[in-house]
Length: 475
Ligand code: B12
Ligand code: SF4
Image (cartoon, rainbow, N blue to C red; front, side, top):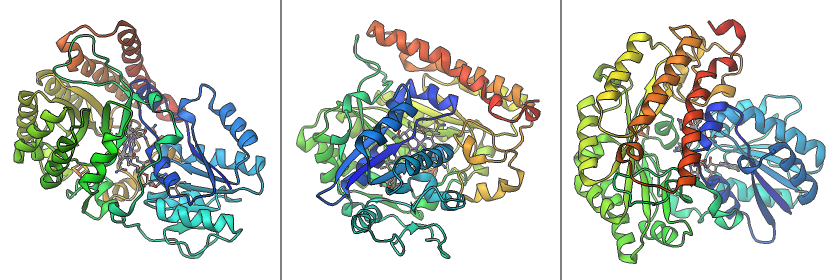
């Protein structure tokens, strides 16, 4: 069979603006492709790379003539995945069409409800084992009923909440299906040598799944049942050693929640003499509890860590069960910088945020040491207790279409247009704190020009968010 795996292009402006800074590999499709048994031809079509995604898609359908089409989608891409599936159905009536990924995992019913159904199967959770079964059934012309983790239209029972398998049982993602050099990210570090690239090619690696914490807005505890599941350290180290890219972006939920695993992986990389630069995700409490692990990673090449600061007050942190305080965040920030590790600090605004909350956040951020900053609106994922709690107050017809953590899903306390104006102002001001600016070292001029343009356009995307809502909600 010919199998086409598709990642949609984003429709929402803040995500398109984000992509100018960071475009990472379609790793999920690399994993699913690796599960395909021998004898089939697989292609990955990453529509984010296409200048004209509609054209690129139609051309792929006409030229490759797939027998099986698989889509991946986050919630904000769900309606695009449905539209693309309908196009595939029209162009290739005999082809089987399936969908997996984050939205299929947390809201499978959204992919099953339409008439006629756009998909022949909806895969919940980790996709390798179910996709292998799907390919085998499709090759045999058999129905998809009864495959664990797979929902089919019209079935009376939907599969339950999926449990992640033992990561040691998963294949290594197939990176031969895309060009490594096309994926890149702005790379922030405290000590970049002069003229080093600030937007290098970057590979994405998943070393572990899950997190043991239970922040109420976060989907990860539901996905992983509160467990942290590391891959075998030697396998991860071998994968990293084999990468073409010199920079690695870990897409773990928390790389250091299990200090023994983090230290073991560092050791495995050191033993192999692997020389790469790293970006990882950490909690401030992990930094404070195990500074020695961060020191070991720094020696290996850890340039920056994403820390979910979330809010500027303890009261707000407590409300979302973050398990860290404002003081913990500040101490971790200092500790990382003292080691030479740059901090990417993530903050959230609430739809209820008024002028005062915006002001408080702005003052807090102004007083911080240099950091790369990102700001989102707290929009809990379907599947979390917080999502269940806001469900009745959601103010748009199809909340999934706007689920990019940049669009408030419940009514804003401020008029929406004012909320967006303040949000954009915070994003713009936050951009000045990045170590890339504060260090002021010479960088390749073309890259600098490109990033400066991207940085100027980024806040504009936030300021215009209100336009994605019905006009009567603009305020
Ligand atoms: C790394 C990451 C990113 C990276 C991008 C990754 C990429 N390839 O471009 C960055 C940092 C850029 C990013 C950006 C965003 N992200 Co993000 N991200 C993640 C994170 C931490 C890991 C995702 C990942 O790549 N995992 C590794 C892969 C291998 O696993 P996977 O995606 O789960 O895929 C497996 C299964 O889902 C399944 N599967 C997937 N696709 C398919 C397809 C088929 C056919 C089958 C059978 C199976 C299958 O099998 C896969 C293999 O194991 C998750 C959190 C999480 N724990 O999932 C959030 C997460 C996915 N992101 C999220 C969001 C909201 C965003 C942003 C909108 C945030 C923003 N405001 O900018 C943007 C959107 C970017 C975009 N283009 O759409 C949300 C999605 C919520 C939702 N309901 O959709 C998550 C869950 C975090 C959260 N806040 O809840 N993200
Ligand atoms: S927000 Fe971070 S620390 Fe909290 S549960 Fe999610 S992954 Fe874990």
